[in-house]
Image (cartoon, rainbow, N blue to C red; front, side, top):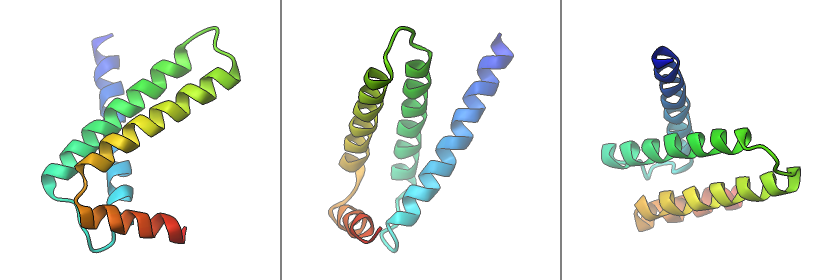
Length: 99
């Protein structure tokens, strides 16, 4: 069981690292500081764990699960947004507008 938890943690960390890299690329020249990268990576790990827990919840309708999933995404987007500088927020807004 301990090995499984370690493996699961590594999997979350690897996925969070990839998500952080993708997120950083959206900012263009407004790169994340190493501290911001670490904070955002930790948030992605927490988010992935929350989403996994949600998938395991029994008795939820598809609609309820979709609603909770959206809430989780919104919550973590807000937390990540709080970490960004004004310039990074602007770069992200421009990226999202041009998608």
